Length: 241
Image (cartoon, rainbow, N blue to C red; front, side):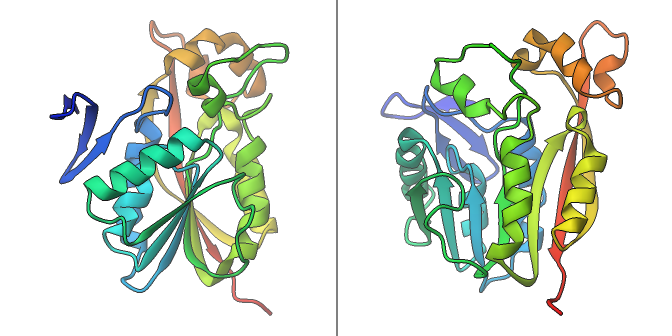
């Protein structure tokens, strides 16, 4: 739910939390809210959490209410500024460190108890030109999997044994490929939730391209408003041999 605060900035309200919105930062969306329903269940009081692609800081701040410490990363300076504002607003600024960088860059390995991955994953057709910050922040590459695959393949190096990777993905990004990649990367994997949504405007604009990427998606149903499914995926890092 959106409101305006006393300084005139738009606010997004989620339970007892408030988030300042920035026109150059993607606001919490369907996938963020879906992950938010699960984040706290996988955090203990002493945990160190990594929030990849933090955006407004939405998931990292929810995690910080329970975790010992959260490190939030985003490649956007504007996102980092927005996250710091929201950490102060929600009184968790002492528990969150915000870094501007490309996902794992500059981080030490094998230290986290949980990685939350809400990374860009909207497929971009070849030759499509994007020049605004919001479209760029959604850009998951030509198949939508560029950042998600990187998160899976590198994620286990930044997790302790039995630590967790939690993220969500569209059904047209090939959930079977994701599960196989997770298993090869040393995770015990489970789909812990799934929800159907109307396809967002960026998805509607490239619907025919999305259909070419996958035959196993709700976007192929004949409906007035195209729909897709979001999966919430939990990976538990196997004990090292």
